[in-house]
Length: 107
Image (cartoon, rainbow, N blue to C red; front, side, top):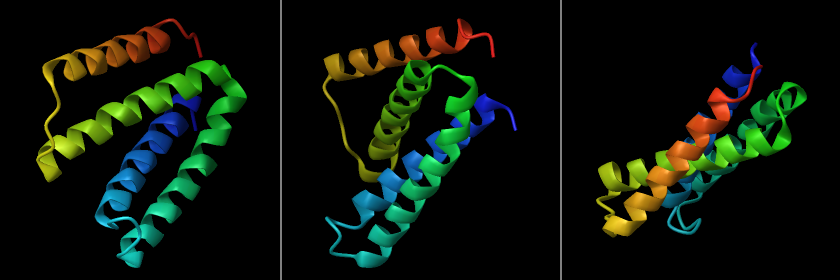
């Protein structure tokens, strides 16, 4: 599997894990917390092969940045969480950075 595919899968797992963590209400609902731990564990399993072929800084920046965007979008759509306009602006900067790192990496 291509390194970027592993990274994409890791990002999806991270966003899922964050969603389940929110649903766990601070691990009061242990079933959701357990799903969160499982998804985070699988996330790191998928992240490791991506680091074999891509620079660690690029992998981590894209993983964290796209994860922030995905978690923010889920928070908005599913939980009705709203951010201040300047916060959306900073999230847009994260998108620019993630795209820039993807475009400039030749693997």
